[in-house]
Length: 159
Image (cartoon, rainbow, N blue to C red; front, side, top):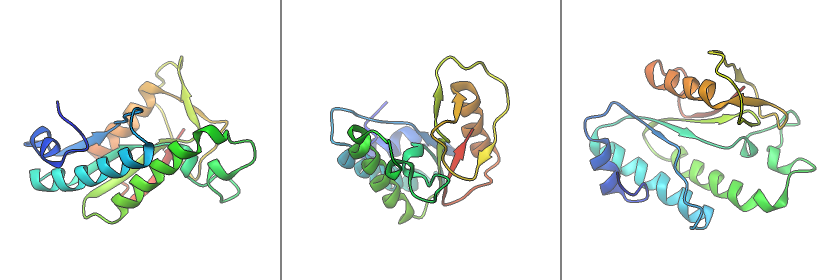
């Protein structure tokens, strides 16, 4: 256990590991502050622990939709989520500047909260607000990126 925004805590938690998955959020802190702080701490702490691979659970709203624009910029996107999405985007910008082997993985749309495990998923070309994926299948996609990294220094969506 530790604080994902503290590089020393990250280093201690990651010691002896081959890779890390980050699915952290603290809704009591402004999104921009949390996601940039956690990305900086992960980049520093994981590097000091000798962990080179980071898989980050993201949000599809910052990924391009079919139009090429981020989903959060498409008509009808709820404005109340915009600052949260911009916080995710700022954290991703921190990762883009680091030397870790990272991948940002988001559901193409959202989670199917009642979705049964199918054992299947596919990597999508872009975000799709109508797409849904169950938690178990999304978890398989995350673990696949740990066990057999196929994507590096990029964002992907999963459906």
